Image (tube, rainbow, N blue to C red):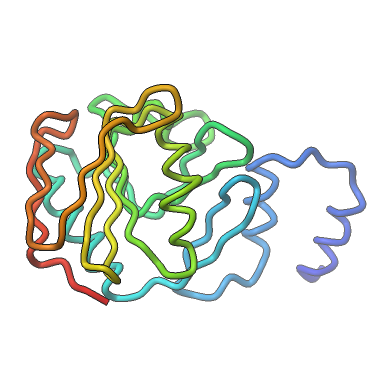
Length: 195
């Protein structure tokens, strides 16, 4: 059976549209190597991963290792968030000590203490818009946006009532002080590359 035949059969069935169904369909599609796929508000987004993007993600993960065990860090791993069909593949997620995966092998959004998204041109609107709102609704304590195109980072904290009530932005080279948050660290940005 070809992928197309399988999709036709699935379309003929009366299937409730859920994140599991959507990701099952995506797994059967020929997604090009090096692309990240996620679902934001029921819409599928695929974006190519660039080396600068990887470098920033890796540098953040390296620094988070000072507090978080390797098993409590994730990158490009599906985490389902509240709202309609939000299956995000966060660039970086740090999970509280003692976090365990659910019965389906997914991290619970309630255990996420930190999320970082590194901007890609094609999906920047998601990171600054619906994903930011979803992370606030999920009460993720720390949401960091890193933009290699502008050379700036944007820190969002104090989530309440679906909004972040504190926002700080600086250019690369300035430290990100997370000592007053669940993360409890300061991240350096002087070696973040610009694109």
